[in-house]
Length: 131
Image (tube, rainbow, N blue to C red; front, side, top):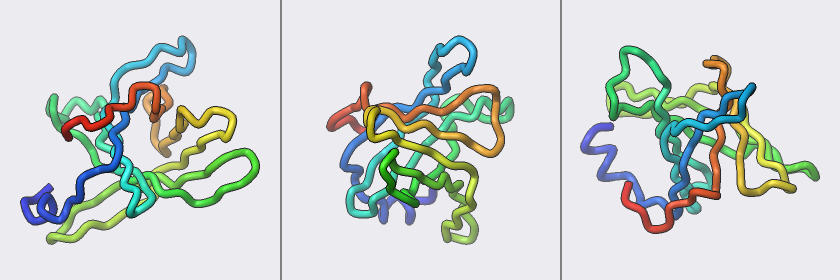
């Protein structure tokens, strides 16, 4: 993220933790943070992808945008942020779902996977935490 982009960045209203969840064992591993921006109505996600070329403190940027609300819950589109020539472009990279029965978690499915499901959880919400 460039300095100009950081200056335009608004303070998030709430900060959440992300977890990779093993589909077989249910075990969770830290995956990054998500920031909810009430003014935009979406989440920005900073995700560690377990890429061998990725540095320890380097994260990929994604957005979680609501697409449809129905009786079962809320459906989201997962978008990858691509920074090019000072602009941000968004590519669809997956989908997500938040059940009305379990509002504490959003289950995220990326088009490319590593055998784990991504979970955004309110249980470990960090109120007033620093980004």
